[in-house]
Amino acid sequence: MNLLPGGLFADRRPHDGKWIDPDVPVPAVVRSGDAEVLARGKHLAESVAPCATPACHGHDLAGGEPIEMGPVATLMGSNVTRSIAGYSDGELARLLHHGIKKDGRSVAFMPVQDFAWLPEDDVAAIVSYVRTLPVVDKAPPPTLIKTLGKVLDRKDKIIFDVARRIDHGAGVRAKGATPTIEYGRFLAMGCQGCHGEHFSGGPIPGAPSSMPTPLNLTPHETGLKEWSFDDFNKLLDEGLRRNGKRLDTFMPYEAFGKFDDIERRALWAFLKSLPPVPLGER
Image (tube, rainbow, N blue to C red):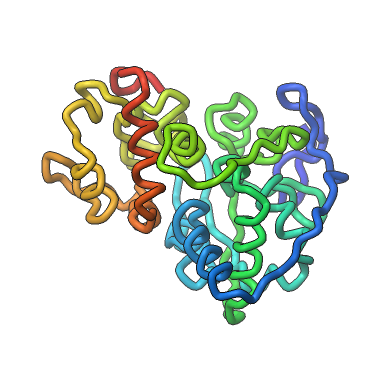
């Protein structure tokens, strides 16, 4: 396997029948200075596409806190306030929709697959918002994907090589924010990286024992069966489970706590619609 310096895989061999295509077109984006658009972009950057969290790019988008995954990886959000200077608005939008950087390579670990469904106007709002941020003079260390991490990525146990997991021709987008199961299904994509395809939690494959075990989000007795919407809101707002135990800080409830009422009701409706699955059957 030929490895790219500073990247993941240089051979560009197909993964699940797909290629990373550096020729995915750069969309036309109209940047806005409208206050409502900028407020929407800020909201999305802090919640649905949670860039501005300590585990990602930090509150000032200048680099967050490292996530140590033992022999798998050391993850570190980059300084967005500096890096966007080299991108056009369209290239930023392509990155947010396709996980493809300016040079055609995939982003590493950035969970674009979780919010690639955002409609074009929401992506334009995010681009417009980040352009208003002051540049912070900070140089966080790069993300390091170790050999075990690359193996787990190839086996689809953990997603590090993001662009390979996105169907660049599909363009599936949400049609609007509504408090429905349909919209909740889109929002819940941000849960699957930790809680698994079936949302039932359990240990993350390959993760060190020091990492917390994601909880069961299905309406099973080991999950959310007895929960109410009020319990769910308390979890999002305070990081407290129904039994009073506090969530581990690995769970980015700070971002989910900024969900608005439509987003909360949509996500709750979707989670309650899931078939009950025992804890650990990811």
